Amino acid sequence: MSSFKLDIEKVIADVALLPIKPQASNNVHYLDLQEEGVDATLRHLKLSHILETDTCISFDVNEGQQFKTYSPYLKSSQDTSFNKRCDFVVIRKHGGVWRVYFADLKSTRVEVGNIVKQLSSSKLFFDYILQIIKLEFGNNELLDYLPRFVCIHDNATMPAGVFKPTTFPKNSKPLTKKCSITQKQLIIVPVGITSTGKAKVSFNQFCAI
Image 1 (cartoon, rainbow, N blue to C red):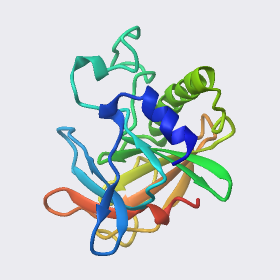
Image 2: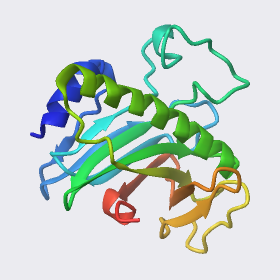
Image 3: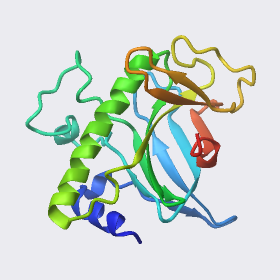
């Protein structure tokens, strides 16, 4: 286990640490992700090919009012994006390079720019956590990490301004869309949804983008 994984687990609340689950049949590990939004059609995602050495966390924890904002010192507001939180974060070191994937599950036609702003808010809070780890433990492993913004999207709708894939209703190849305001790239992963709101996709499909 990397020293970073040990250090972040000393800082992050236990409820925000996502368990990496083993699949006994093929020894492939995965995340079991839930979306509880009332309008969500994508309600349950199985994200496979997660590594045991990855660190996986969530900033969208439904465990009481104290988790409605990044900090109790911040106001809760529906009109701004600074408290928008992503569903999951995967932190991985590959080939000597740290990459951090800020990701969210989407079902409705949200503007690409709004998705990027939401994920950027999570990145800001994550960067704050990194500074705590550096101050407390002298660990600066991730200070030069490569950020990736990812949207796992219901294949039937897609973000506003993005064409629906021809492979609907199945999973489609990931595509990228640049935010016209920030110029940040969003990786969009279209997934087919069952009648009960379930989908599955491999992390390998987009981790190299």
